[in-house]
Amino acid sequence: MADTPTEDTMANVAVQRIIDDIVSGQLEPCAKLRIESLKEQYGMGASPLREALSRLTTLGFVTNESHRGFRVAPMSQADLEDITLNRRMVEREALLRSLTRDDDEWEVGVVAAYTRLERTVERLRTGQGADGADLERAHKQFHTAIVAHCGSPRLLGLHDTLYDQAQRYRRLMMRGIQDLDEFLDHHTALLKALLGGDADTAVHALTEHLNLTLTSVYPKP
Amino acid sequence: MADTPTEDTMANVAVQRIIDDIVSGQLEPCAKLRIESLKEQYGMGASPLREALSRLTTLGFVTNESHRGFRVAPMSQADLEDITLNRRMVEREALLRSLTRDDDEWEVGVVAAYTRLERTVERLRTGQGADGADLERAHKQFHTAIVAHCGSPRLLGLHDTLYDQAQRYRRLMMRGIQDLDEFLDHHTALLKALLGGDADTAVHALTEHLNLTLTSVYPKP
DNA sequence: AAAATCCAGATTTTCGACAAAATCGCCTTG
DNA sequence: CAAGGCGATTTTGTCGAAAATCTGGATTTT
Image (tube, rainbow over all chains, first blue to last red; front, side, top):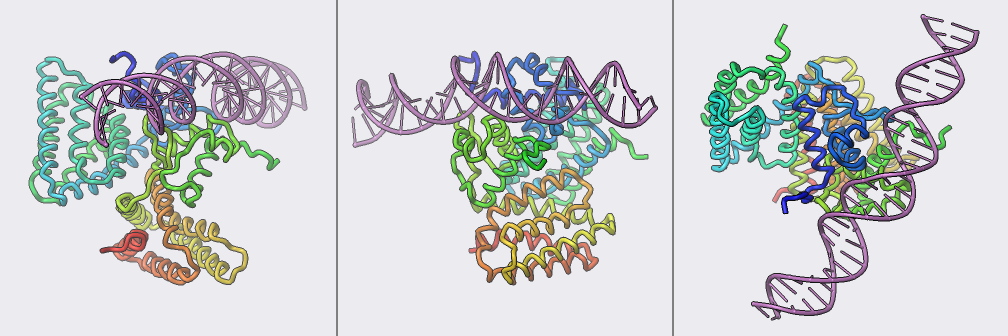
């Protein structure tokens, strides 16, 4: 039954897997994405792969000049700055909408996601069955919970792709266990500001939090 | 030479043409997009069409459930509200960035685009060689000029697709010549607010302008 | 009669081989 | 050393067919 779960199309699976490989750095920036190679690597035909790369191009993970094939999108300070300004804009809007809806579920979801994040950090620190991927999943879930109740499908979509695009940079600065304390502290402070009841404080804390990726990967001169 | 300009791929051409047909209403909301039919309609094979539909799905012009094929995205008040809130957010941000850069070129571009728009309206009114498509092109150029110098590739991309998505609704309210006067007046007032030198005034005028599509297609209760 | 099941035809998705067009690398030439 | 030519490679698109899935209606069951 769980043999070849084709409930999703291969093209959809390819999109997810390639995003993961780009974000995790397995596919390096500017790396050539030759269909022939990918066919082996992902074990599928050319059609779904072409479709996947095509979609990834409009999502911004891949570049594609007319008859020059596909490449992993390059990384640069300018790009991270663009990602960050867009994230600040999107999450500010989404957070305000989540707050003014005074949806009970919102606070529940945020606290639950924070708790999961806290537990994952703890398990990672004590070395009991939790890897970087688990932490990354919990982190994304927390940030998604913050905007989840904004009510706008487009804001949610933007949040998702921008998060992944930022994650590709954030990975560069989160490589040691020693950063774990600081990592959790930042999110604890963010949670406090979010639940404090003052919208301006919440928004400010969130946008500053998003700036952290930028300022730690490319420190101010 | 101008026989079959292959400088662009067929898939790219297909994306543009299908967007045009969706925005102009030739492809109605929720209409089934069968590849077999489109092959005839656009005179190309299945591969570039699949690729185009796939990309249009991530852009939001087309929907696509797993093994149920492609459809033109449906229209609804909720959708236009979502489009509008995203436009207000994006254009506010892009306008502020264009303004604070105090780029000489920005004002030049905006005024030039406005002049073109004005001339097109005039030619349309006097019936001398200008059709709805010309007006629409000039209108899009004007709105694009307003955000053109924001410096953010992502904001520009969002502006472009959101504009087209809004245009599908705006078309519903612009069907008579009698609306032309009001149309131009709105844009004249907007131009004045943009060039007035006060950022808050400019942003307010622009966001209210964007609201017009929403309030005229779905009047407040 | 309403609900569940089943079946055949149509559609979507994927595959693989091939052809046309464009690009790339390398070589020669001026 | 720059410019141009040429073959090999790669990308893009075509075509036909196979595998998986959906659709709609008929049949059976409750």
